[in-house]
Image 1 (tube, helix red, strand yellow):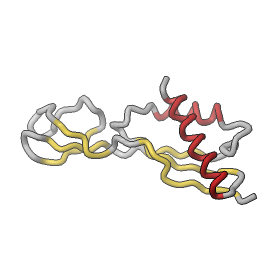
Image 2: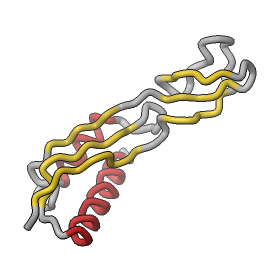
Image 3: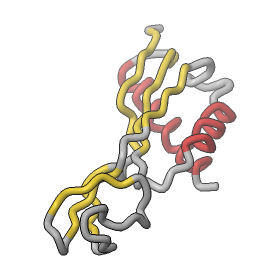
Image 4: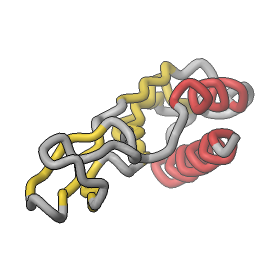
Length: 115
């Protein structure tokens, strides 16, 4: 389950920001895990909740958005929306697709408490 490793990376990013920006606690965090990012959102939420106690994420509301993937179809030259990496182009059925979006896992927003 690589989501545990991803959760650890998110926690490190948040703790680094807490030291740099001088806040003590995150009250809510909003993440974006694109549909083509290869992230199991339920497992990521579970992992974040499991590591949160005794950190600045303890008690934080965790929101995870799942934007659709987008790709450029090489044969027909159009941008298409995908929900999975193994989908074919809905126009021509080709699998020759170049992902252009929805591949990222990122922190979009945090609400924090000052010291």
